[in-house]
Image (cartoon, rainbow, N blue to C red; front, side, top):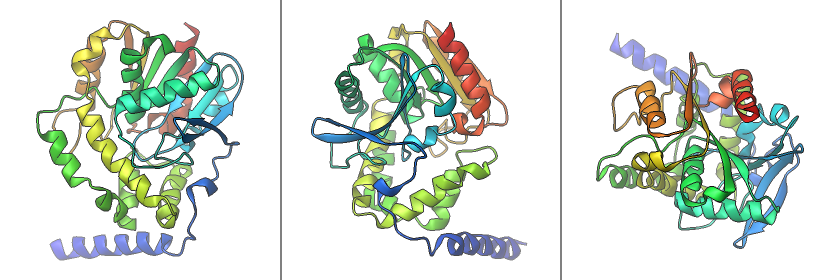
Length: 311
């Protein structure tokens, strides 16, 4: 039986590899987001972003390894009532990549200055995963720029013991990220979902195609350094200080929170513990849904967000 299972796994892995093997190389700037891309220079970093709609500003912040394209199922609906700004964080997507001193605070400073460049004093900060942790950090470090928070599968709620962040950072090196085999890219990205939508295929193909991009190594550096930055920037103890109204969305079947390599427990336990610390937050758990809530359950997510913003 073990030999049979192993043989099946090899066949599956081979199919996945051959399926993507002959894909042409793309540069990050060549990825089609389905929306026009604008650029603003902040701290000598070119920040790429999608700018759709009119009205109060919504700042959409993607998660680790992702980019603004992860919001394509949300932008059209949100842009009917709001000005939607979906950014590529430094190190990701079409934004500049460099050997920056990555931290959650670094991103807060860059995004705050990004909004100022657009003459926006205050916005709703909507963050997914690492983007949620950045939004939480902004509410603590620059509360004047944050009117409300929408936190989708946010990092930052989970508690980490001393040494765990250092260990994980040691394991997830830039070389480790760069050398990820194609079959693992496929597996890793599908782990974001309870049932992977066919429309999410681009998350795999785009990631594979940029492996030959000229700044791919700097992207891998950003992913690697941000793993440690997220753990070192955990802020469970500071959550009671966040006064802005907050909507928190989690999938019941999130396979990434809690961290599967370090902790046991359930997503609901992490979500409820974090929300209970926040004086003005509401939690929505979505059944049969993984980590990428805004994509897998986009209709429900859009509805929840718009209802919350209208309150």
